[in-house]
Amino acid sequence: MRLVQFTNRRGERRVGAVGADGELRLTTREHTVYDLAQAAISSGISLDEVVSGQLGDEREDYDAIVAEGRILPPLDHPEPARFLITGTGLTHLGSADARDRMHDLAHGPEAEMTDSMKIFRMGLDGGKPAEGEIGVQPEWFFKGVGTCVVPPEAPLPLPSFALAGGEEAEIVGLYLIGPDGTPWRLGFAIGNEFSDQVTEAQNYLYLAHSKLRACSFGPEMLVGTLPQNVEGRIQILRDGASIWQGEFLSGEANMSHSIQNLEHYHFRYEMFRRPGDLHAYFFGAAILSCANGVTTMAGDVFEIDVPVFGRPLRNAMISSEPVTVKVRQL
Image 1 (tube, rainbow, N blue to C red):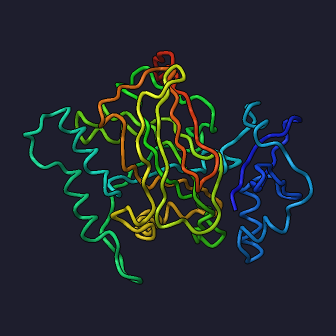
Image 2 (cartoon, one colour; image 1 turned 180 degrees about the vertical axis):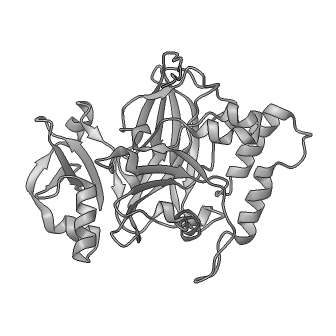
Image 3 (cartoon, rainbow, N blue to C red; image 1 turned 180 degrees about the horizontal axis):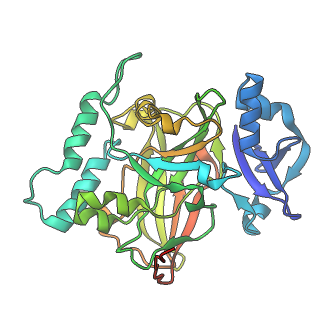
């Protein structure tokens, strides 16, 4: 099952399940995925079962929703500050190579082995522990809260102070914390984590700065089990023509960490188990256009097409006006 959130032409929020014909079949009671998930937890049944029990005869034209700019992220929180956006990297078999290429561009090929390569090798050795065991700790970063998430098809703003804006195509795990503090995984989406890799490459201690940007995921949330092997295509379009394409390859078969291991190290912190909070957790990118010599420009469109997640995720990058922040004394 794949779920979509959108607004109808009256401005009302709705949830639809994607049908085989491409139309959306709408839920009859809860009109947000957040409310559907809360209903599933309180009823003690799966999200799939709750949605299936609410699907009525009302339908919407998916293509029209997208064309009219009414698509929303497939998960959001009524209080955006309670939606934590985080992630990890160096979790895929191609990710260390991409990071090292960034390092070489900034510091030269003779530089010593990077911390990125060291932590990647740690993941290879201990990122997939046996059932019931805990593996090695992954990299982790904070990206923002729900206000940094832009809908599919909406523009990704490039800050005026940014040195670059590059796609990071990743699978995103989506979670709700239950009333007793239990993290519940609602599903998965395809995401563009969108970072400033030039800033990051200057010095690894700038990683935190490079991640504080907008991002996008969706338009659909996959409910249920993630395939072991997830394949697709990433491309950057400029003036309607593709200037770069890369293979999207993810899923646990292509990762150095298990998803369960990543989740353990995120949710072990009590602050991330506050009842009612949502989490979007980016699982890491395997390939980056910047590591292949691409410099993006305002107006470029990022497209991530991964069939298991349904419709491609598309966002154009736009420039933001300079902002001067002045702190005032009370």
